[in-house]
Length: 143
Image 1 (cartoon, rainbow, N blue to C red):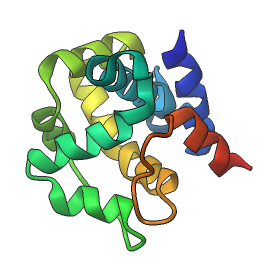
Image 2: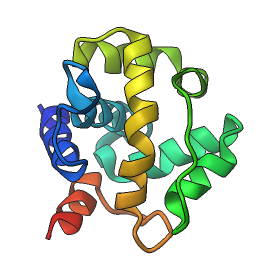
Image 3: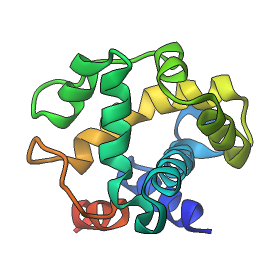
Image 4: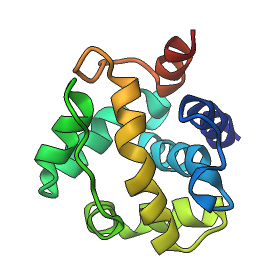
């Protein structure tokens, strides 16, 4: 499954997939999230626009400053699991939790812990790369 491959890549980007004590690991949870968003929003484009879609979704939910801090080159602002749960569609969070084998609250908490670092590492130039897959972005950061 592509989500597992993406999860492995994100886990290695974050310094190991088992962060946070969640059975699914930070990478797997983020992989499931970006996979769900990519499949739901861009159809055959897969995860190519998933990062852009996620940043847009968080921005529309009032997390503008946090999302911009992760993309920008300054210090990353924290976000809570409750804020993530409110920003994401319920069905997306449920799907992510199910794929990772955790509760929706655990999934939201793990996303809140790991997403700032992941977005920061995937946007080293201070902007979201357009038209590029998450897989390609992660591989570039591992070189």
